[in-house]
Image (cartoon, rainbow, N blue to C red; front, top):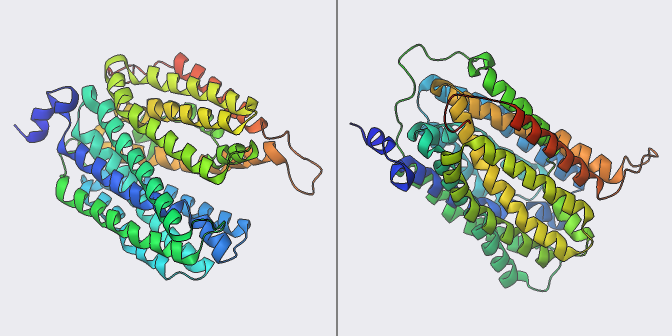
Length: 416
């Protein structure tokens, strides 16, 4: 019997295939690298290159749209080839290869080119990586597997933020704006974990048999099945109210939190997210993933109500830390649930579609939040104030939770 077959018979940590650990280590390393640079990239554009916020928004918008489009195609291609590993390695490799170019970027279009190439790599790797995890474990370990991967990813983000904090403190303490030398120092430091991320996946992961030997699937969304489509509609309702977390940072600042306070808040959030993800994934293997997703959305609704009512910066800090519970309960669990409700030979396409839809919905969600907060400049519509986006997001989370509770996906212990 194969290594994968033997492990699939075991439950818990012993039942986790080597691919789970390899992808988790890769996610950890790449997030250490990415968070060091992406969190200060807008500051580099604004403070050093003098770029306007509209250009910064354009760069980020095109970057995320590029990644979203590619996720569907790369997921389907991994189904077509019945190979996940090397597509994922190629995606991580491209991001690592272009990252040094940030060091020489001295114009906004040069930064944009590197940023878009980096997101191109993310678009290639995400769906095949998620499908590889799902292929490597059975339903009784699937929640734990995705929980471990999310915990590692989030721990990497926390470590990356801490390293960025230390580098900034050492190189330019006391200065308000980011300097070019500090940014380039961060880029150089970020190269080491980026390379290690690629090597860990290339050396540690292995492709596993995917589906039957029937003809490779054609690119058709109907092959994903009705249950997946209903799932995406419900998730879509939730995500329209799930605007960019940048609004939470703005809310913290608007309520009086300092820049150092915001960084501390982000580190605390990632710590909670990392600690909750694996136990929540394991719990979903035992009691069903739908219950965990519903629970996470209810936590989200209550926290967003808190953001709407918060009066001080420390209240926003506490709420943002609790926000990590929502991510820990729901994010990896939802990905595990996808594998429960679609045929394994089209999992790559399913994960690509899921990630792409969420990516596309981020734009209208954030636009709606911005309109509710401050309206349209020069139009006479001044919005409803800083609390409005959070009331709206909390309401849609409640609607989505009720819809998920009413929906009966059936088939499979994880989907129940």
